[in-house]
Length: 175
Image (cartoon, rainbow, N blue to C red; front, side):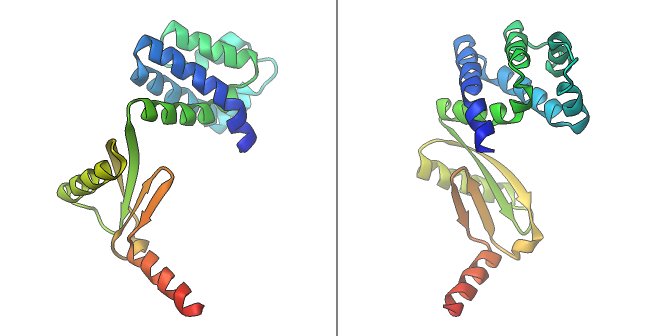
């Protein structure tokens, strides 16, 4: 995995530089996301790794309808270097660069039950104060948490779930 990230990093930076130059982060996010989903599909993956697949056909398969010529050229460069299978990693790294440039943090709030919008707004405000950035929140439900919530904001995870508290209590009692 780390080798794939190492190989993907210069491509992600190049895509980000082009998107920044054009002032079109969202379009590149959409196009990269589409291409990454197609490249990750097992049927497409088998086709993309076939040695007889023409680079132009690979680009046609991966480029979403209405994608810019620069994006098609980017895909052609990846195809020429046999790096199309790195698209999921490239997309992830690109999104990190974009979030940093736009000063946003993406956070996932997983709770035992669906949280009301007001609670999510309170969490968003608290995270905004903590990070000093805009916060985009996705919510998920995991009944195994029993109660409370787990907030995953990149490198920071705040586990306020009942399951997490019980696990910490069990570990403390065991020692």
